[in-house]
Image (cartoon, rainbow, N blue to C red; front, side, top):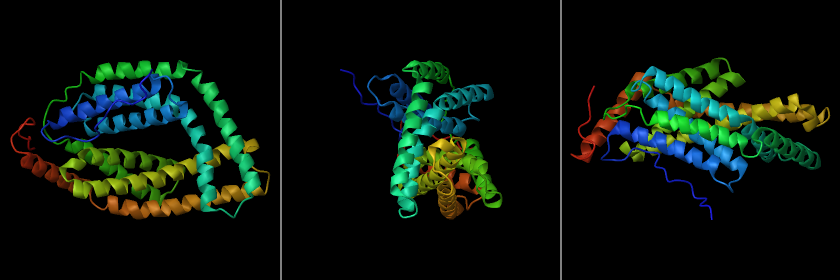
Length: 319
């Protein structure tokens, strides 16, 4: 009988271990987790796609944390490999969340649209997804193709020279700075493209913060929860934008006029609410300059490492 339990992962640095090898361990564990999702018979395809793509995003986030600790070419090759792997599965995932997104819209505006008509739209969206999944996945063929890509990525990842014990300041600062820039871009020029880019930077910072949370869990775990909230707000905003785009691209899935216009207007109204909330959370997350943020985080890590005492990690490199 096939074991359907995924491999265990620890998405956080552990005391008594050198920092950069810990990042390498996390990278390799996430590859194994994604491989499990795509190669284990009996898993639901939609769930496997979702979990694998989440692992790809964690991997790309961790690569950004250590991008200045490895060769530029290694970073570019691995980042592109896991980016492209995610893209191969993106159409299936996008179509899967359409009906879920519409259900969330109906929960937010329960009395604005006909329940009977919305039931019909939900059914059409689910049928659209089933057709998309059948066309893209082709049984196990797509999963096998992506799994081969991941195996190549893992072999390359094993060669990465991540052996030191020092804080990856430049990688963390770059992600924070780009997220802060994305936050201001969305305020000044709100657009689907700008919110999509900001969302990616928020997720990378969320992964970094989660991995580093053990250095001061009472503080950083709370920040991680705020980053999770911000990711969810921006994620639903993105899903609503995708729903709007799909209903315009495939009008046969939606409602006849004028009900369709009302549906699209409700999507726009909900997006405005979510974006306003995201600005409030983002203002707290990105209140610091990137240099101040990284100086603070590095200070936390140095103090935490000192508190561990002599052990397997060795002395932290300061600089």
